[in-house]
Length: 446
Picture (tube, rainbow, N blue to C red):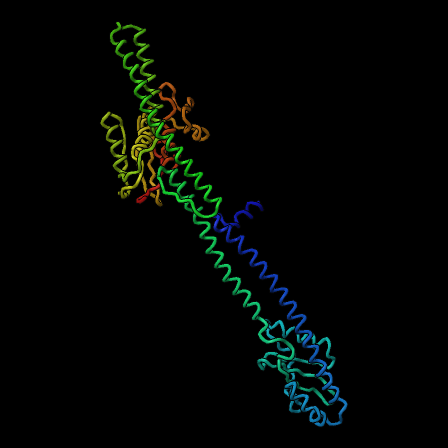
């Protein structure tokens, strides 16, 4: 559970993960640098400077305590106080002492100053680092009463201590932006290669220009070589299909001519049955193989493709219900021949096992969905994935006496995959039989 949650925290894209790999070290370095800088500056430098000024304050309070008239001691130390820019106010001119130290929450240096004053100056009572900006106001106890001392803050801490952090953060931000741009340029060839591979899986050919790092160029060349080999195999497959179709049908035709000259009998009927079965198997095999050899993408009317098939089956006397399209979609790019064969197989498969078939189409979030429903026995949920495999027959789900080679759903599934879509089998909510939904992306441009 924790591992799954941990994986969900990371981005799914390679670009997002690369950015994360870049950002995490920068953030860690910034945190470490900030902690070390704050510790060294606010704890060491400030403490050392405050300790140095404490000696002067201790000397000043000692002279005031030992003098019968504090004004005399202050007049004698006037040059000393002028050089250090320290101002001392005696009672009753001294301002009233606050009940507690006045320090801003974000004033880390001020907190260190007050800590050192309280620890190393026994006569220290209160401090105000908020009232006058850039000035430290102290109240210390003397023999003549509470003294108010004003001194520049620069005597106890450095000025503008945040400049180093600001410079480091700005430099890190600039370098991060440069790194983002560099990563984007490096990942762009990977995205192009992925888009070309995805398009090729849908039957589209996108130009690939190897670029980027050496490993990416090697992968791009390997993809181009693989695509060329597949296209050569497809060309050979087309030649083989035409040859098989001619070579196999010619002897079958001669056999039918020979049988037509034979007298009627059981032997002739048996041979005609075997020849018809062989022709059906040959047609099924050629349809399945032909579905793997795709034609070019063409703009096609989605509703017209389904309505033409419905009219053809209605003309043959089959009971086909065609539900109206909810919205007349624009023409989309598809392989019309492959998709028509897939729908034809789904319809004929439904008619083979049912007497009512309903056809429909919907457009949802950029996807076209053709669905074929029937009132037949259906397919058990556990057998639906296996039913889409070629040459698989489910005798328990479908009656084997009705014929077929188990290629109808396989052809439809292969056509859906070639379009970048899916074939989903479920139970028909209206007719109670099988519902085959063929989903393909609605692409309006290449």
